[in-house]
Image (cartoon, rainbow over all chains, first blue to last red; front, side):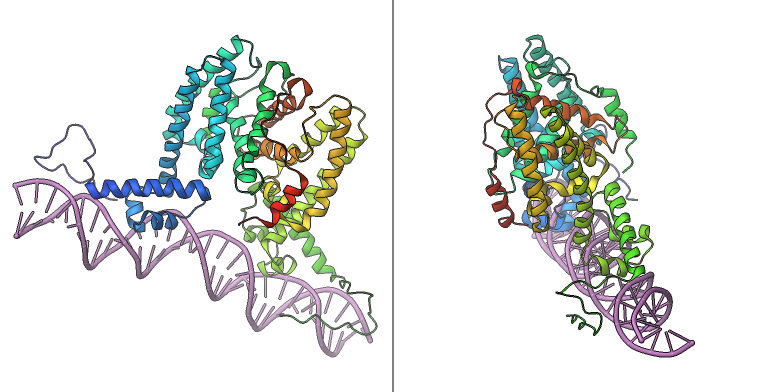
Length: 229
Length: 229
DNA sequence: CACCAAGCGGAGCACGCGATCCGCTTCAAC
DNA sequence: GTTGAAGCGGATCGCGTGCTCCGCTTGGTG
């Protein structure tokens, strides 16, 4: 395909570093990314790239120069959202009450989903399958596991809960959030009610034996290679 | 468009009744419906009508003759699935234990979703919005409300739960079911775990005040006229 | 200023979709 | 058997999509 441009004499940079973007190129890249975040949040992952390019005020060619594939663009916006999720985890770690810290993380994630349809639609399938996100995902899961163990040690959360369960539960609440609640006239905060029910289900008082064991991290990563589509 | 063929003399049927389909036509209609149920269950509501026609062994023209629109076809298969949901409600009503009857309905619905992607993808948005489904939906909700009140009277379920909550909760569990669990290698019954957590959240022991009131039926039906897309 | 590659934009491509059209086939009433 | 309309099927259409190509513009360097 395209040959990598030969290192130009004089402008040698160590390793195979990327050359800095031209000023206008960098500006356009930002505008595309911002527009994509907007459009994906409003319309979900099925939004057309043409719409994104239009709102960014650039041509389609420019968009694809910066993000070779729609999927790349979606991933880039997803990383933005995941950053704010990471902030929420950081904040939760600073809370004293172990139960409240769990509530904070889970609520923050649901809030992201409530305002970002694209995040919801991507987060379940993508997060487990996309290699480029595995590392940061794993880091977040480790911190989340610590929060859960802290709450379990304090007897504030059911003993059979595992960190791997949380993404599934968040995805579930997110489904209600994005599809049923936020896009409709009836109380856009309705998802808080169902998150409340799920949280009640996580309390130790509620615990009854769960029928199926939680997936191990190994199972989840094995899953990414075996995916059919 | 097409003029309704004039009532033929001798074959008069009272009112504006439909004339019976020709034998082969009825057979083809069944085959299309069966193929659609299969394909939508496997691939979700985004499956192509061409694939359905192919699997039914008919041409595209035949398919659209019986179901003028893809949406009509989807609705027809949805009604099939809703029938089995109604059966589940009937069975639940016969159970003695009020809590178990709730568990049965909810589990049955989740089982449908676990094996039918199209049902999941349609049930949330469709069920509230589609006028042709409103009547049977309303009937089911009434019976479901009776089951819940029975369980509440027995002190087996939290007092602040309303029948209108159940579809939302089922949709939530269904999201995990269809998107994350059933299509992957890792334990296809994983959704039972999360349904278990939600059910624990419905027990009276777990109840803590929920932040948002449940939607009233009036709000839900008002929703159908105000929908943007 | 002069220069040229880095960057731009939007016409255009290939594809897959839902839906339609119309010449041919088949059922069933007589 | 004859006949007419009900039914069939698949080539075809229009459209929207993700993506590419290529002539033109622009930024930054000597």
